[in-house]
Length: 203
Image (tube, rainbow, N blue to C red; front, side, top):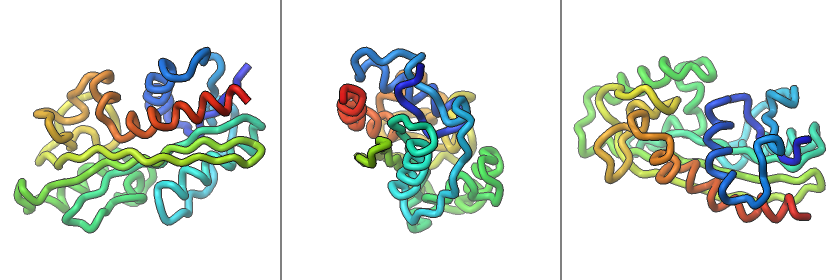
């Protein structure tokens, strides 16, 4: 029986979060965790003005509907020369939510004439845990890097095929899942959140 709910319908994200949390939350098994999709929970309207606000909206809604402690994240890519855009609009940058390829291609087109020194960007992730009683904790993780000029790699999702993390020579989509989780914004955020998740599950 589930003890912890993950506020996403994205199977890739569920897998990443599980891989990060499992070694850090004592006694947590895959059977203890259920996604919003597995719980049949609807997706709330994410109308917050920041990654943290949107993550809290998702976790609060799932904790209320499931009666379980809920974790959620909201993340996206922020391009420095674009003033931090796409930011919280990363998943619908091309006008349709979750259209990964279209979002990526639009961003590449918008950056087509920008030289390498000005292609700096970062991935940002706000990760939260919310209990049915209303206890909340928020952490932020970032991964600094730059944008490639064309997609490369078959791994990851979203903007991974065009993002090269600082210190790496290949895109996120070319990294092993283990390496990506070590350095990613989501990895950093959920590693910081893990002690709070463990505490919630103990209480």
